[in-house]
Image (tube, rainbow, N blue to C red; front, side, top):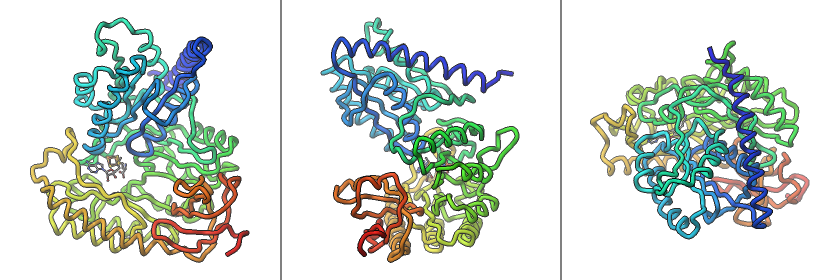
Length: 483
Ligand code: SAM
Ligand code: SF4
């Protein structure tokens, strides 16, 4: 049997060599032209994609590119999402514009990667309609980016644009290539992948088809990465996976997600631990107990409900009932009383009746979510739900969607002011994007607070008095200030 760990190490070395080789090429070009090449990444979709974009950015910076915030760049890369149909349409819409830019700058490189590229029909459409795209790769081989760039640069021979296109797509993988460059967005907080892929096959969801089967990273590799991050000034980590609760099930020996959290809790310098996403079916009592006892795990749980109807949950293949979900929330709240619970809900799943929808509304009322991402069901070709024949009419789904939004706004408004007039620990994250005389920080429960303060506070955890709730955020004052 192939030694995967060894293969991964060899692959990492190979990629680092290619990165260095390209760096030499780009450096000598810089000496010649006096200009560094620029890159721009447009990231669609979830936090896993944002994390992948940091890896892409790390490789590009190491090669010698510098980042720019417009698509008028030497290298533009779209990291795509395909969870809903409109995510795909947005990419096609913007590709037309990129084509125009490339006419002005024929040396420009365009790459598309991410979940949408794992779908044959999307790749076929790009080959046909957007032949100016230079590189296409998927979710499993991001680590190969430097190699793909080199192949494209060395392949200037084809007479047609489309003949020069480099396409590298893998159906699935068991490889986890570690220790390649990385470009963190924030110096003080970082996302850390703990498990890739998904085995759950919820009947509406494309993710298992485009992200492959579950692969947990080794405990030692995760801890080593987090220790390095802590040494580098990171105080908050966000553990990432489609279903973090099934972490460790495919490792030998097996280890639970709760045990992983306990190990991370021991890392000096790490003060906050977040994770996303938790599938309700795998959220164990062990995890609830660990969360209750922890000093570092944040008081926020994102727990996607999808539907409140046990009948629909069964057809969705979620493997829990409405009652299971409510019981889980009650047990979590008992162990962590001040926790904030957020969720994902889909409206208009095939066969959803008014009664099913009212079950969802009932859960929203009973749980009192702090906030929710609400989605209109989107048919994804290849998933079982796409061929179910009782698709809900758009009008009906939209009307339910609006009612759900009202109910969520009501429950968020109730939850929002909970901590008003108290002093809480806040991680100061950045200068406020609307008003640069203010700083913005994040509470343990993920709410934001804006306050006046010195920019030196960014990256620190400080006590802030929450003077006033404004619904989705607070206005506050650091406690050593006036209030
Ligand atoms: N793994 C996470 C989980 O199971 O909770 C969610 C990952 S998915 C990227 C994020 C959300 O997109 C899901 O929770 C679901 O609400 C929504 N979603 C997935 N497929 C969808 C579809 N076909 N139509 C509408 N929403 C969808
Ligand atoms: Fe999709 Fe379900 Fe996997 Fe989440 S758990 S990624 S919703 S299949």
